[in-house]
Image 1 (cartoon, rainbow, N blue to C red):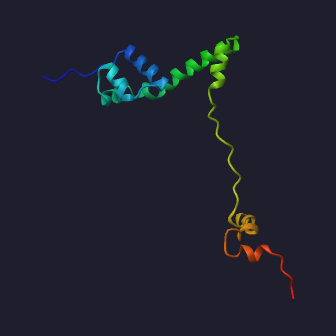
Image 2 (spheres, rainbow, N blue to C red):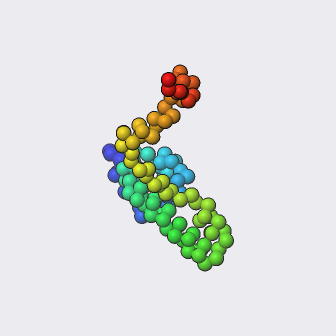
Length: 124
């Protein structure tokens, strides 16, 4: 006799989204807490492990922000302690010729030519 197909409950789905959103438990640990295998977790809770986790984190951050705006010093400190993940502005692209010209004045440093090229020469 075969085992009956797994059917996740609404409560399990919510729990997986909340726990995955916290980032403090691995998929293996979440599966163990639910009494299922990791492959079953990833098969039946894929949306909760990704989109649901981000939705849970977004809800918590929104609540923290609202508390901070209302004057909660603890919420303000916690919110400001979060490091924003902003991308650095891209560096301007420089062509090969411009890059070679920029590097040319100091190209001899660290080579056998450094002593010869660093000294002023008199034309005879």
